[in-house]
Length: 227
Image 1 (cartoon, rainbow, N blue to C red):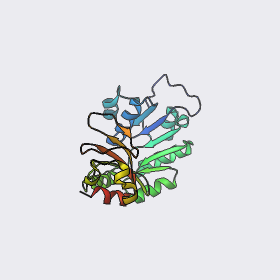
Image 2 (cartoon, rainbow, N blue to C red):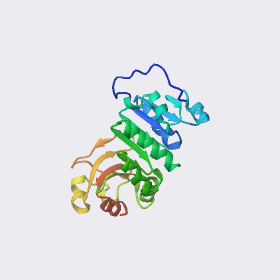
Image 3 (cartoon, rainbow, N blue to C red):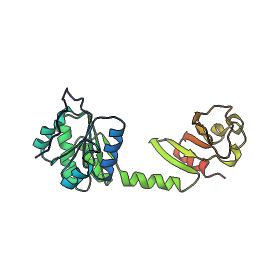
Image 4 (tube, helix red, strand yellow):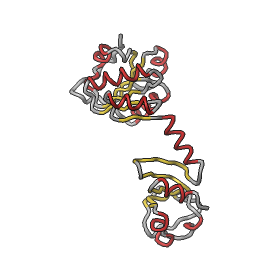
């Protein structure tokens, strides 16, 4: 039986994010959403987990594979659902199916394999997240060159944070002309002791600068690998 928090008013799918599964992945999502002022309600079947996070963000103890428990929580009011559990295929499938049946418009689901992800998509998940694979791929990019951070936005478009290559140092972006020569675009520059600023043709690059650069992943890899 769900332990339902009081005081939340339902007004037709405006109750924010329903998160099921509060492990490392789910708790990070809940903490961040709560810190951003977003309305989030976390659900977990483990009493110790609920006790651990009670007071940090809104959380209830319930069996999310039971549609009646989810109905008591008000599943149909939420505009976003996150399935943060992936250890049990049956559990993640059932929770995703219940969210889809309730008509939640946006469903994000954690998967541990491509096959798992395809199953979740077929039953209603709009977005599939592969935390371990994504983290591994990101680290691989970071250890291979000057990159300090790596975000693949879409296929063919990536944004990285990196240190400048030698041939840029002491020159303006117009002079180094990296966009034409390497097919990448310097979006912004963070100079030591200064705030981030958007880059333009007259921006001079210093050795201690941190750059935010966008482009094709392959071109960025080649660019960041230069001395």
